[in-house]
Image: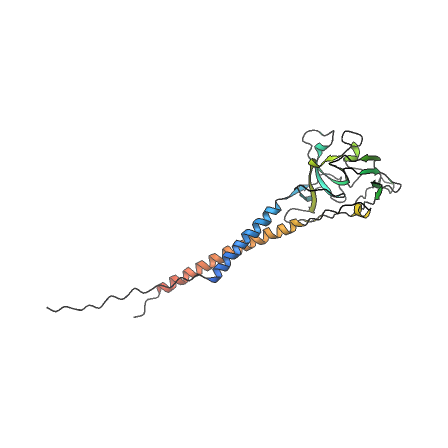
Length: 266
């Protein structure tokens, strides 16, 4: 009986090698950058809030029903001419839950504010201020302001509506406790934009007080635009990176399956 030699079984055919795609790495990096940029933009955008203006006291600058964007973060100082969101509880005759109002700062703590000059202008520290944003008149072709003279208490601001004949503001409370000054703790934010957070345009800031010779630069804040662009751009990068990575992985898996299905060469 002879021993039969059997041929050795064929070696297993090696499957296709898995190689990491450089394009997949690019997609992952894109998604990572998007998370970082979008997260930072969203986080900084949270320092801005929206408010709707119900009345006509700030017309024509802000019409009733318009939405403004304000920065609620604490400010080292509030410049004259800034438009602010304030808590109405700052006024001595306010009832509980009266809400908020939007007014313009026309005096800072320590300022002497007087109305009116012979030209019907307010004067701050003896300097007449031409306010182009006030356009109301009393029907006789001239603006009509409530006469007053006040030294603004420290750590407060003195506010007025742009429609001076139709505004409940600091002028009414001169001679009462607090002399109409709004404590800085009752100022909720400075208006920096017009419109919603994702579509706001910069709010027109006045240089009237600087032009009158008073110190202090107007509010300059367009950071919401940068934050908005970062948030939206980051979200876009995340979407491109994730979708691109999924497509690359699916295509790579499909190629491996097709290669494995090809019968080995004999």
